[in-house]
Image (tube, rainbow, N blue to C red; front, top):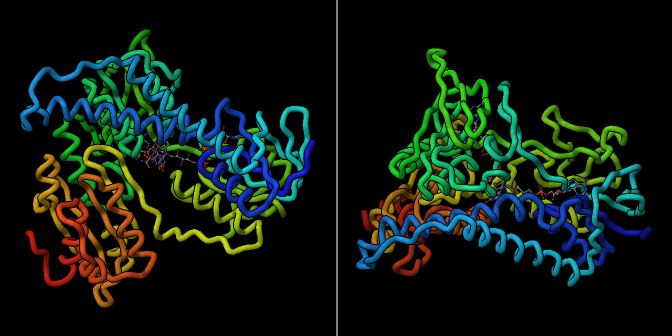
Length: 464
Ligand code: FAD
Ligand code: NAI
């Protein structure tokens, strides 16, 4: 048994960042993790492995579609799937070991096992009970099933993202349920590897919550890459038939029922907070009807000394949102000022092209009755993008009609996930579109398209 200032439960991006920041601030800190390796969903079965497979499959796509155009002739590579998985596992291992190193460097104790909270100020791991002044719950999330449908997930034929990252072989045909972030990223991976991918989505559009124009362009580009979509379809059941599965869905417009067979069905209909085994009910910790731990603006639960962050509380289920909450909670516990600006949290989809957004969408601004202007610039007018066959897509900046202050931005195109941060910084400083437009941007870069979109909020872009 040991006494700590802080025990963090969960070592995902929320938990490990909170633990390191607490230690940096001079607090004696431990982090409890039940998995074999540190890093949570993100490093083990989420962000990192999916990006490794997206990267590898994108290289194949480039070889198949663009190499010859640049005079790089010869046969395209063939796919050695076990080796691709080994590469992905190596990337995971490098990252999870990196967190182990950071824990040692910062003197954070890793308490191995599943933690419970028998009382405020105590965390039990196995037989041992540790005393602590503060507890941060960062227990993350798990995949949700298909609401209202009969589905049994076996992680082989009917899989969540976890099984999709580890399939025994590349399926001939895959049905993806849900055209959200996971469905489109993992669907892209398999479509590039030669799988016939069908996405079945409940709504009439893909990627709910995203800017409408981006949704339409994104759908068009994914279709052109060979992905198939059935929108406005409510999945009723998924049956497993020996080595295949059958998906039954109803079209919402006319209630017509249809079925689709597949070698693999990926269920990608969202994630839910994971708080099992923590003993929160007995402690009287307040939960939302959706199973999230309720906190105040400084991540305190209603039980003194217990905080919660990341996917197990309200807000977007994103690694960087969890990290920011982890850092801010550490500051609060250390008696400093912890703050997260929820208006400036970027979202990125790592398909090709990438899709990124921050702040308000046009639909939101219309609904709020806010007067705004739109500055849009196509990557077709960007020399660098055209040189690398990446002229599809655009940058769209939304600015206040009167003050020119940037309210949101939406990018679909090359390196969108990096470009968006220029706009995040601008928004944090309360910048106007003109501030961006007056900033010198190196040529030839993709970021010139951001400047041109900012110019389009004023007198107009130069290269369009
Ligand atoms: P988690 O990462 O879920 O970590 C929680 C940890 O707590 C787990 O390791 C769990 O074992 C541990 N734990 C839980 N209960 C206990 C207990 N009682 N005792 C001990 N340990 C416990 N987000 C992005 O921002 N970018 C991406 O590109 C991205 N890609 C993703 C791809 C996929 C396929 C998936 C599934 C998710 C992706 N996400 C991405 C979302 C991201 O992974 C999560 O938002 C993020 O991991 C949340 O961090 P967290 O610290 O709250 O929880
Ligand atoms: P999601 O919420 O992004 O998408 C789920 C989709 O499933 C929605 O489009 C929804 O309308 C649809 N759906 C729900 N019920 C359905 C039904 N019965 N039939 C058909 N469609 C149905 O959830 P997803 O993709 O599972 O991702 C979970 C979380 O993981 C997200 O919150 C996301 O933030 C995070 N994530 C982030 C990534 C990134 O930042 N690049 C990558 C992967 C995941």
